[in-house]
Length: 377
Image 1 (spheres, one colour):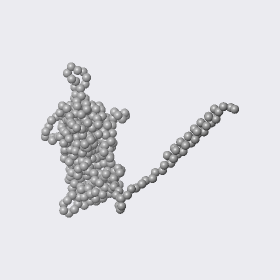
Image 2 (cartoon, helix red, strand yellow):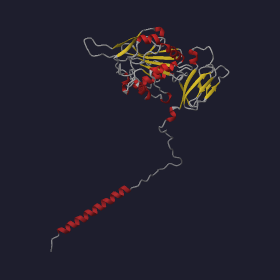
Image 3 (cartoon, one colour):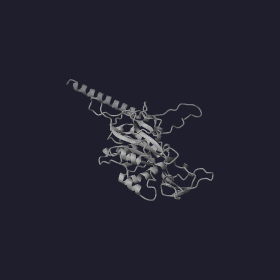
Image 4 (cartoon, one colour):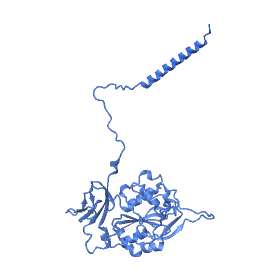
């Protein structure tokens, strides 16, 4: 996650709500979040040798100024090779710079950032609401019933946005709207590019332009977007397999798989042309599979980046179920009868003894009082 507008006050930090949502999601061990400053990302992209983003499944640019134009081709190559890219806008995003440098990546080109405006004859600022989510979009395919309201709004209907980026329509880009404002303008729009996926949020991921991160539906929205962009749940890169299960790699070529402990395991595909399968999934954690022809000469940047695949081995969450399991009901065998359970009666006996003592004390007191009333002879 690249933080374009950090703050010493946590709640004002650009990625505070995003990080909190991810921490409270159900992604669990499948997710490792690392933060970078824009300068650190540029330095990493300038590194020579191996692809500096080879171990990244998803890159989030949160209100980040446009990167150095010389570095954008490396970023674009990684996206085309399968890395997810999520761009969220803000005051540091300039439409001209983004269109000029990220034009091939964006779902739609940026037009301008606008305020929701004011109502005629009134001075208070207006705000834009969100329309019901497009639940047919694959971002929302994994939502539970409790996360979807009766109107399909993900509990986002009360969201109010004061400012947003408008986009330039272009049907040739094949963009899909996952979430829109009540005016119809895209709020969250996506696009598939090569083997990768790109999402653009046209408002801020923090509270600067609206109250989206304060709504109950923000966590499932972030979770679904991250899962879809990173490819979690599909057979390709970024997928999750259970401990002991085989992982089918994407190509019918030899691979070298690096385990979480650093061991390099060679994998050879079968002779029938089927894809290679990695079976040594006994260790929980992140794995990196590198195709054997990665070092061959003549491959362009996309082909070299595409030779990496990543997946996670995780323990099935159902194995951690701690609820009691109902057992078979007991049945009496043989002759039927009555079972008598004897319970101690000491409490009742103690109370009865105390009652007798009280009665005895009362009688003694009464007799003493009667004796004192007798006349003196």
